[in-house]
Length: 273
View (cartoon, one colour):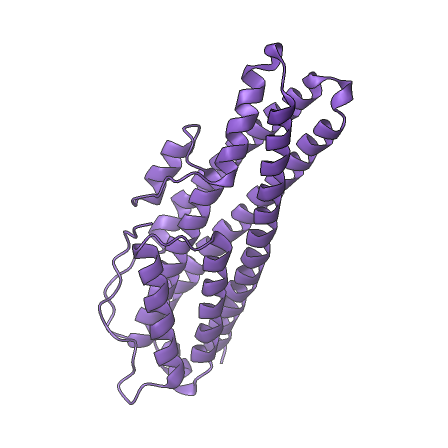
């Protein structure tokens, strides 16, 4: 997936010899930036785990006395970073809510499949509920993306530590947009608006969300002609696959959320000295 964010073309090194943590951050940012620019096939959960590793290094970076001293003298700029962190936390929370809603509705569809003897009406009813939930999810994503873009906008900064934190947030924003595109899917319903808000070239390869959506839409359209056993098996298979993916992504997202909260708390503590 190509990234539209313009990152600072500079080293994060401080005036003195760079600390090993600073060099590690440079390396992690470079790898993440390259993976986004190259549209790699890395899984969404893998990308989130890489972000979590990045924030572990950020926390180490913020513990360095020299960096804490420099940040304490740049409170206006760091206030912008703190504002940005709230929007990142919002999109994380919205994404987790979307995954949880999707998982609950998938379980309802699975329950209907197990009770197929009660008739196909139950299956199509649960399919409709699931697809309605998907539309609600896209509306929630749209709202968060509207708040995300201005808060993460980069400005030229001369201070290396402030500039680093903004680069990290920009990278986080782009990675979360990749997550959003995975959840929203590439189908027409609701996707065009989300794609515009992401404001970048979005890879529209089909996700498992797309596959489940397509099967359920097909079942609804052909309920009068009957649903075949092969369609039922395909639906079970895709739902099982999607549930596994949702679990992996949700676990990775929870770890990232905790690290975002920790970084925000560290910044607030620096200003309380």
